[in-house]
Length: 193
Image (cartoon, rainbow, N blue to C red; front, side):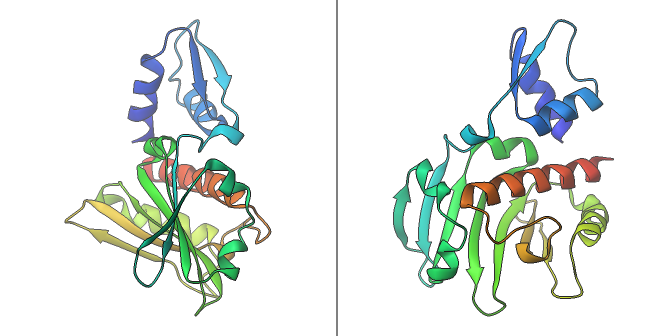
């Protein structure tokens, strides 16, 4: 899936290709770059500048506020302090990993930061997804939720972040989203292999 989308992105450019570091490394590993193409690493700071960033009420799903990209510099703890809200982030950079948007909240019942997203990976790759998640998730403390929706053709993923390798509660919202992008990129790549 990444291969097809990344190859299309590379072919749509001339000699200079702008890629995030994960995309560049993937393209090199899979020989997707053509002779004479130069890769320019896109800065992570700009990754979500095109994003739709919104805060919603968890009880009613009513929009509280549309936010600028600057809101992502807020600490992740914002949602621990405002437990009635969740963040919705939609970005073109998620297209490459088969995700439209990510919702992020603090689950007050289990006291964990949770990411929810739909993942466009075929149903037949379910075991590969579980294998990767089991390898990188501390399931002794809590479980993640992974369910295929045949109606949407998506895996519905509910991921408590606190139990993922290398996650830090002192991340900003932007760092959390970068962490999720990198994690999901690796998840999808492992599924392809």
